[in-house]
Image (cartoon, rainbow, N blue to C red):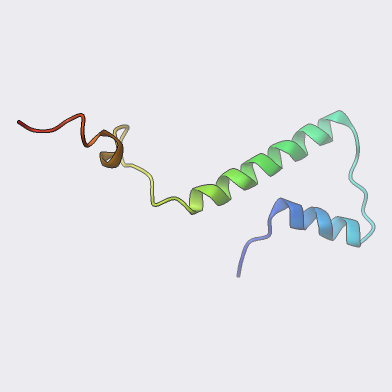
Length: 66
């Protein structure tokens, strides 16, 4: 089962007649929810994180053994 995105949840609210407040604080929170949702989805598409602060694929050329 796929997780719903924040945009899909907003659409469900609109279809069911629920209005989202236009107050600046709600707008700020919604922008944050969209950002974190997008960021989480993009992170799932990466090839994987590093286990330390120096991932091998980035720093491989810098630390060659001689």
